[in-house]
Image 1: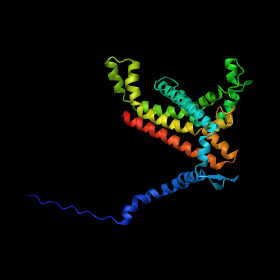
Image 2: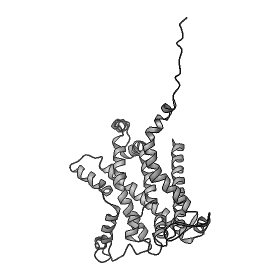
Image 3: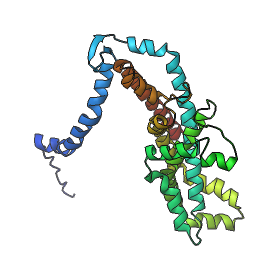
Image 4: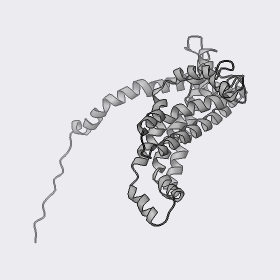
Length: 294
């Protein structure tokens, strides 16, 4: 019989057990200072009525939330935000995906087109909003000159949200283009060759090879675009300031308005908490859908 080799388990000391946490400590400190602490302060402030300096003045409990859920302006901002997010995600994903598909072809000057499609991610949203403000001017704007109209897109309640949403989607399309280009480059060419040999046409290859292979990339792009769209602020502040009326008063701008114009920091903090919960629930639903699909 072969002798069994005894396995001796070495007891780890306290320092050895804490070693991994020591490596993580700098990151945890940074997250605690810049993420966890502000969130806890926001959650705490949402339970108070604040003074003009943002200091807690009177404990209201859930009073701010009760007022919030009975506010017609808040529910309008939720509706406007949902429409805005839909526009941004559709425009950003479609433009980014089409650009990536076009740049998969090899021809002279492809590098120029690739750079052009990726350019929006290098432009600050505030700077681009100011340029669009001139382009959309009813008197001297190039958009009205092209379509031979004198329409003010930013003051029309029916067009303002669509206009700002299209601009935001286009700004997001540059990063989407890079993600989709990376995803397309990772698809094995042999899959397309085998499909061609089996008689599959271009549309069938796109439907049964390209789309399934891009599902992880598409999921990531959609989730990040939804989160970014919920947090959009700069272009709305510059182009419409939430107007005309409340046509573009998304929830982030409503938070800004209540905090820094009406000096209701507690009420704005309650809105921030609600926005966080909405984004968290949507993200959780999308991950659940993806897991179920897999």
